Image (cartoon, rainbow, N blue to C red; front, side, top):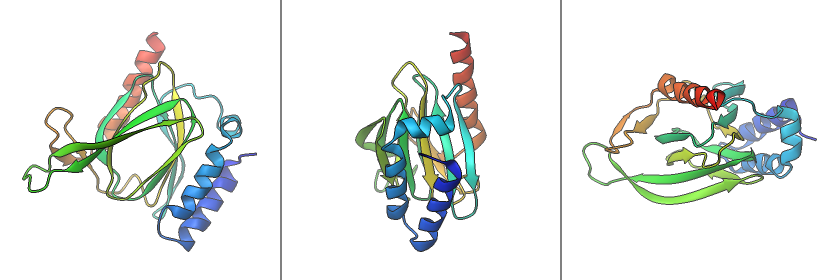
Amino acid sequence: MFEIEAFTEECLKARKEDDNHKAVREIVERAASDPAAVLKAMGDPTRAGVFKLYNSKELTILNLVWGPQMTLMPHDHSMWAVIGIYTGREDNIFWRKIKGDANGRIEAAGAKELSVGETAPLGKDVIHSVTNPIPRLTAALHVYGGDFYSAHRSEWDPEYLTEQTYDIDKNIALFEKSNATLNAA
């Protein structure tokens, strides 16, 4: 049985014991391995959004719900993260900075799809873009090794792949735009 409070406490304890994602990854893997239990605790997702379950200087836990065919441009987190999918699917493209580029441009370096029950660790320097390729909502537990809301992060222009400051309000608005599309359908 998955319980949000117990999951949070276990992640906090693991974070205090080890300042990397390895111990937290095991906890997220265990939760994601029983997606029906997570879904029961979280409820069926009904709208796209970034839903805060816990937030402190040391750790942030989100229930992140991607809208149908929603894409988020390349971005970093400036901290490690662990993602565990409990319904739907997400496709990640991983990027790396082009050495010597004055504009901080990036190039594709790999990809990974995540399906129900799967997890992915992201190191603190990882840059990725995310797409929900299916025509329904995708939901995942996201655990970050710091304060997701106050960290200085970057995002990259989707056309020119140049670095700029991450705009959290603009990105949250993408979830609302996805909800408007979902509601119109």
